[in-house]
Length: 312
Length: 276
Image: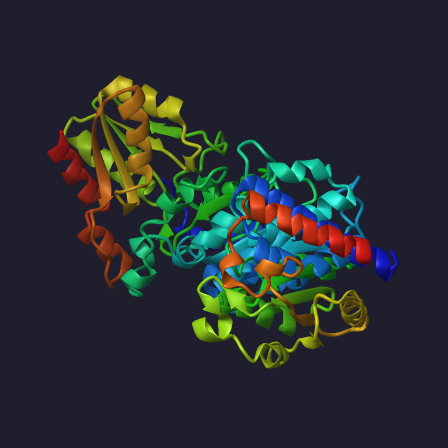
C-alpha cells in the first residue's frame, strides 16, 4: 500500500467530473439536493450552467436525465446509492434501461461504511438491483485512482452505467505505473495458490491487508479486484477458481445478489468450486463510526482473515 | 391540413385503434379514442417532424406518458407514414415492433419508452431542459391521463418544469374522467386539476371539448405563444369517443372488441368518416 493519503471515492467522483467537464462539453451533472455530499459541488463551481440541482426528487431526476440523454447530452445523475438504486429503481429500469439511454448514475454513500446515518441510508442491495437490469454496467471502484478511471470509462461507454462510491476515505492501492482500467476486466493484485479472495470496492484494500495476515500463517491467497460486477470477468473468476480450488468473495453488500452471487452463478454453472461469501447476512446495518461498523460486521481485514481461516 | 382533413384523419386514427386492439385481442381502446384528436393534431399539424428522418436531432419530441394508449399513438404514426398502416394489426403480437406500451428500441419515431405511469412527464422535462441548455428550438409534448396524475412523480416533474420555466414544454391532460377502478372522483380525485397546474407555475389552457379539432388547434396555438412558463392543456374528453358502446364506459379502458363489436365499431366509424 502506498503512502498517499486515503481518499473517499465520492471525492474522486466529483474531481473526475470536473476533468471530464473540461474535456467534453456534453457532460452534465444532476443532483437531488446532495451536491455537497456527493461531492459534485466542485463541478457545480466550475460549470454552473451544466449542473442541474433537481431538489429532493430522485425519481424525477432520473427521468430528466433520461430525457437529456435522449437528446444527446451525457447526464451524470448523482445521489446516495439508497435513492439512486432504491427509491428511483423503477425509473432507472423503465425510463433509462428499457430504452437503453446513455445515462450515468453516480451513487455515493453506498454500504455500511456510510456510518452514523444508520441503516436507512446504508444501501446494501444496490449491486443486486442494478446488475439485474439488461444493458446496465455496474462498477464498484476500490480507490481514488480506480474511481476516476471509472468515471472516464463510463463516459466513453455508450449506454447506462451505475457507479458505486463510498463516503469513507480509503487507501490508494492502484498507484502503479501500469495501472489500466477496462470495463469488465478484473485485476489480479496478488498471486496465490491456496485460496482466491475476490473483492470489490473498499473491501479490496481490506482484503489485501487480510492476505498479509494469512501469509503470516503460511497461507498463499490470490487477491482479485473485481471493479466491474457487470459485465463480470468470468474468465478470470474461473481461472482463479481452477487454480486454487477455493473461492471467497468479499463485498460491502448483502450476500444475496451482489458480487458473491454473481461469482457463484458463474462457478456453479461452469466450474463448481467450494465458496464462501463474505458480506452482510440478512440484517440491516446500524449507526456508528464507519470503521467500527466494518469491524463489527467482520468486513475489515481482521474480520476477513478470521472468516477465511474458518472457511479453510 | 385543413380542419376538415384533420377531422377526417382523426376518424382514420380511431379506425386504426379499433383495428389494432381487435387484432391484438387486448389493449386499451378507451383512452386511445379519447385522445384521437390530440394524436392527430400533434402528428399532422403541430409537431415539426419528418417520418422519413425519425432521428432528426432538431425534431419536436412527443412522450406518451399515458403509455397504455399506444394504439392511438401508433395509429397516428402509421397514418403519418412512420410505418405501414397494415402493421397496426400486429400490435402486441410476438415479434412485432408495436409493443403493448411504446418503446424506443422497437419502434422508429418513439422518443421515450413509457407505460409506467408518471414517468413520461419527467423524461419530457429532461428533453425540454436539454433544448434550453444548448439553445435548441425544438418543442416537447407529453400526454398524461387524468388518472395518471394521481402519481406523485407527475408533481415532482410539474414543480421542476414550472420552476425552470420550460416554455418549450406542453403537458396535455386527457381528462376523460375515468380510470380502471371507476370515475376518478370516486377513486382518488385529482381535482381541481387546473388549479393544481397553476399552483405549479404553469400557464393553463382549459379545453371544454378535447374531441373538437378547432378547440384543440386554438389550445396549441396559445401554448406556442406562451413564453416564460410551461403550458398545461387540460382537456375534457369522452373516453371511448367515436364508438357508441365504448363511450363513457369504464369497462372499455383495457378491453378489445370481439369480432361482432369490431364490425359495429368500424361501421360506425365509416359512417362518421363519410359525414365529416
